Structure formats: C-alpha cells, structure tokens
Length: 452
Image (tube, rainbow, N blue to C red; front, side):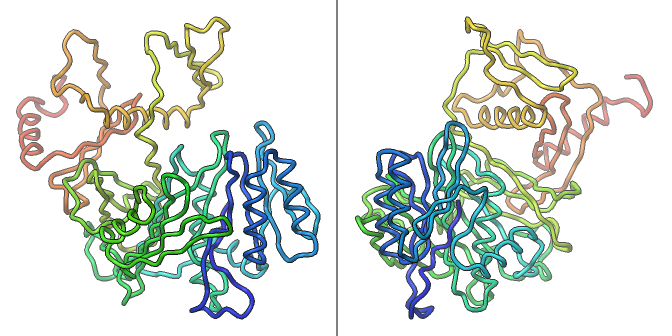
C-alpha cells in the first residue's frame, strides 16, 4: 500500500499545504488502513480502527464512520495466508483486487508513470531509488509504485497531489514500513566521462536527494532533503502528527531529531567522508551491458556511471546480511529432482519427514548469493590460505571476463570467473597483483595449444 502525503482540498495554497502519513498500521501488525478525505475525521477513525481488538471490529468502525462523510478507506488484512483488500466509503464496504482513493485524474497519471518507466522528466540525469525493510526485501511492484508516486508530484502542473511517498507492506511477518532514498542527479551525463563519480544533485540544477525512514520505536517518520539542508520529524499524537521543522546538514539534523525523539534517527544520506571501499558491485541492464558501479564503503555508498550515452534501467537486490537464522549442516539433506529442476532441503532430525523448503532454480540462485553475502559479513573471516585437509572442487576451463576499474575509489582491474555452482564471482585485483598474476600465468601456462 502506497500513499502520497500532501493534504489537499479546501482553500489551502501550495505554500500553506501540510503533509502527513495517510496510512495507519494496526497496532498488532495485522492490517493496514489507508484514507482520503477530511484529514481530522479520517485520522481519528483510522487510529481507532487500528487499535480495535479484531478485524471485524475495525471494519465496523470504518464503515460506520464513512457514512454521511467524504472520507474513504482502503483496508487490507490477511485472512489466513490470503490477503483481503476492502474499499470503504459512504457507509458501505466492498472487497476488491485493487483500488485507489482520491483524484481520478491523478491516478491516471500515476498509472502511466508506473507502467511506463521510460517516461523521463529528468533527461541526462541519474535517478536512483534504494529501499528496504527490517524484515526483508521489498517487492518490485511496491518499489515501482513508490517511485511513481514520487514522480507524480513533478508530473502534474497543479501539484495538488504528491509530497513524499508513504509505502507499507503486509506479510506473514506483520506490517513493515519501507524506508527509502530517492535521488535525481543534475543533468550531467552529456558532460562527464565514463567511470566518473555521480555527485549529489544541486537545487540550482534541479537535483534532489530525499531520505524517508521511520523511527525504531514506530512513533513517527523522519524526512530529510539534502538540497534543502533540512527536513521534518513527525511524531504520532492521539489525533495526528506533531511536526518539527529542523534545519542543518545530515549530522546536525540527526542530532536535533534524536534529542526530540529520544531514539536513534537513521538517514540514507550523510555529510561525513566515507571510509575505504569494502565491496563493489557492477549493475547491468537487460542486455547484460554494465551501467553503473556501486562502491560499498561500509558507512555509505558512492556511484559511478559506466554507461553515459544511452538511457538504461538496472535493478539490484542487496538482501539482508544481518539474518540470524541458523542451521546445523550435518543434519541437512539436499535432494535434487532432475525432472522438475527443483531442490528440496530436509532436516533429518525431523520425525515426520517434513521438508524445510522446496526451492526452484531461480530461488536457489538467490539463496546461494545470499549465503555468500552472509558469510562475507561474518566476524570470523574465510581463511586467507588454501584449506588443508579438506576436499576442494575445481571448475575446469571456467569462462572469465575482465573490466578496467569502473569506479575512481577502486584501483586495479575487475576479474569475473564463472563457477558452475556458485555462479559468477567477482574479484578486484590491485594493479601490482594483476601484473604479477599475468607474469606467472605467462611463465607457467606453456605455449598455446599445449596440453600442460
């Protein structure tokens, strides 16, 4: 569920307009309530329904409250494993598959943007969107809807909808807010070289960098604009939100917000120099051509553009490297069904023969990637020497690809090797080591075509 945050209607001008969250999660994490219409009436009803003891009680409150009023509600909950979505207005409720609330014309523009991401409003610029939750990855559909909601504000001349987006998802783990960063660079792709760092946009040239997060205690939101040098802290009250307008760079803003909120504040942007590069990722487009390099500094990211000549779109899932689930490998059996191309994982300690998981090929690849990332971030490092007394399987004649450094913070060359089980593995070789490896290979490989 995604909502904009602009409070519209009545005689409010653009400068007088307030902003608020138009989605209320149930206190017990079992449902989401979105609303449109009179702010105070809808907020009061949403808060009451969110605190209801049961789903039916919440529905009754919203249906009754919508009678003879201009408020509408979207109500979603899980009925067992099945999601149920209900539209409530005029004292009636109806189960639907999809819905929208508010302006029909704005929704039409939103749909065009969401279904056609090639619609540019920032040519020659890099648009980036990063999002995540505390419980796992965000569905791609929710990511696209959140970006489309942000672009909607810039696409409508009257600016009568918009503000920042409020995205939530409901799963078997309950309600999760999807914190995100949305940035648009200045239009600079026609004047930078391939491999250049893409700087933050500037207000003068139309760039923007927005960070939207929730508080650790779920009492509100933190919205920060890098180009405005300030942002908002919004704390829940009994009948709405208390808004605090705070100025300053990211560090100063965080200190002020934490003093008021009394809990840590997290931003997707910062003003302190980033540390050394811990890892680098190359993003590719649908054709496999490299488009961007993202350097992970441990305390931040920096992005360099590889493709500066043609429009591109790339997606990457970072995953949750902080997972705490553990298994005992000696009790795990893996079964492969050659006909269905599926893998089953079984806990042999189980007395009923139940499987831990049935995994299809694409999901298995993602699982392997996540396991590799998780092992990468564990405190006890992989041995820096070849293991002794352990069997090692060597892939014969692997495919390999090389690439010059795509990011100014990373010296040397990129080497990619294809492992038939682990997939493509990437390595960065410093210039000296690449040179030494080349000399050793030439000295020991023998003449081309030899059997050595």
